[in-house]
Image (cartoon, rainbow, N blue to C red; front, side, top):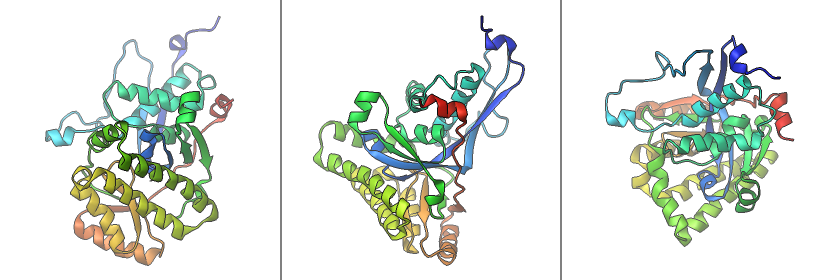
Length: 309
């Protein structure tokens, strides 16, 4: 008879889940679309599971805040998917079931846990964090209805050009950004439906551009992604600070778009270091932070691959 792992566990189990960048196609993942996303090593959440006689959640003494200066400071859980996916990895190892829980369904488990907390989100972030690296995702209705999940295709991270991240200290709340547009989509609003389809198609064009290393096309697709988002959501919903981060990059000739729903922008400087230097100066003047993106490769192990069947 197998022993209960809880009775034999003696060592702590710790896993790290990286932040993600929605490169192309977001936010169509919430609307049966397609996206390309990748994980970055710049930011992460880590969870440690330790043997205990009681269920205790211990906040990190520095990173996990329990005191806030204002309600605005408290708003949102932008790292919720990273926290939950890291916790899921710990539990999979603790119960030794990593090979039994299919990789494709793990993002659904993460998202369902977050939905219980009232978090408005799609599968894109969770897929990126479960798989790691660069992933193309197809959330078409056919796949979602038949399989209960999308079709997720890992890609070589070396296909990505050098990218940068612009961010502010106080990112916007994802729930506010998604709310009205989703209702319009459900109501059959033609503008939203057609625009969201085009956003999803950008991911398909982006996959081809990445494989061909067609950087001018990538620049065009990134800018178009944001322009469509702005058209659907409107400036008031996106927020002046978020729009300014995008426009700062565009003023120096770089491509830029949201990494997710706001608070940070991914930038492609096709002209290289000289263009990055100009962008650094513009960000400094505006009080934004600019740093190179560190791509986090896939960290799937043999058991994860085995779970794919």
